[in-house]
Amino acid sequence: MKKIIQLCGILAVVLLCSFAPGAWVAYESKAGGYKVSMPGKAQENSQAVETAVGTLTMNMAMLQSDDNDVKMFMSVYSDYPDSILNGNLSKDDLEEFFNSTIAGAARNVGGTTVKKEVISYKNYPGRHAVINIEDKGATFEMNVFLVRNRIYILQVGYMTGAKNLAAVKQFYSSFQLTAAK
Image (cartoon, rainbow, N blue to C red; front, side):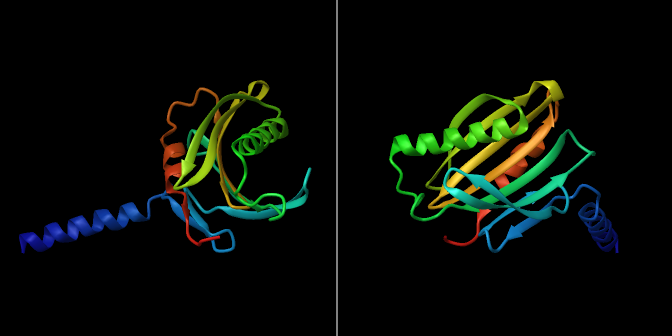
């Protein structure tokens, strides 16, 4: 009988924790071939963006939060024309691609890139960047990966000086490709 009561107590704690507010929710984009977790349900949106290579569709999933230090989580994917970008870029062209992507992001938010580093996901090249927006006291971080002709961007935003950024690492580490492109 004592073991049954203990088991019921453990089960109750597990069930209560699984319904606790702020539980992370898996977001999966079947069309984008990826999934990522956020601390709530993401809202989807698509936006046409004019670029040097023509109009691209940016497919976004975003969560804005007032409850934690990290105020915004966003995942984005977009396909470039295969004739322009096909995953076989030279080292210099790859560097230029990432530099212009990060510079464009900084320009779009009125910020300054303060950190850039080489990263990868599996065998796919990527970059991590930190962008400060001094007049708003905000910081954006982003991971950018190139998978053949598809770009994936994972972006978070928080108030500069935020102390608890464990959610940033959790968000980035939850990213997974689910379908071969």
